[in-house]
Image 1: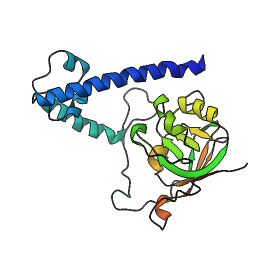
Image 2: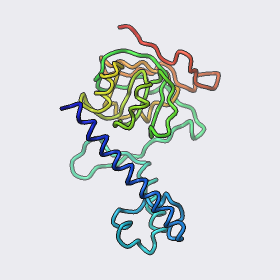
Image 3: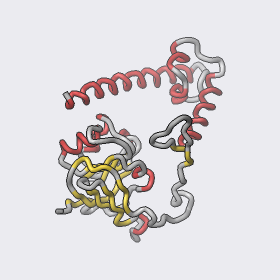
Image 4: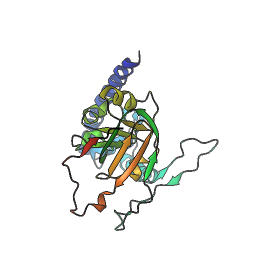
Length: 231
């Protein structure tokens, strides 16, 4: 029955896609009526608010919730807790602030769920719908589901923040025969697109071989982006 898990998940995602399409169309109507500022604001409102009586201050409410969302994006909750969790601030990327990265993080530990060892350039992906993934790159993300299949097939290895032996990424990686390390917790935040890594799906370790800023040419080298390492 395990292979059928993806069937239900795919149907679930398809129904959500239809709902999002309907919401976008509703947002366009509300903008035309002057009740929202942009069509995307519709996703800041609840289903009850959209299907019942739209709040009189819908535009202001959407803006407030959007700002609150940005605040939430700047914090991270612990993987487990008892009682009230204590959120921690997500450290800013020094390169975005004009600084330089250090080599403090050299090895990332996780759970090896698909055997094999591969060296390759990292591609950090947040949304598979807008990702430009080159064949042979090492996919790094927080989690996956069936909608990621198109870019997972291109990847030489998978590194995921959460998950276990029966998680989506683990099952697909074994089907594709590529190394996979899950439950790294921080890989998507400490690794950056272009970093050179060695992924060991046997031991569950990810070794950082070279940081992208160390590439003196100023761009990521795509030739021979990955290679299988014989144990």
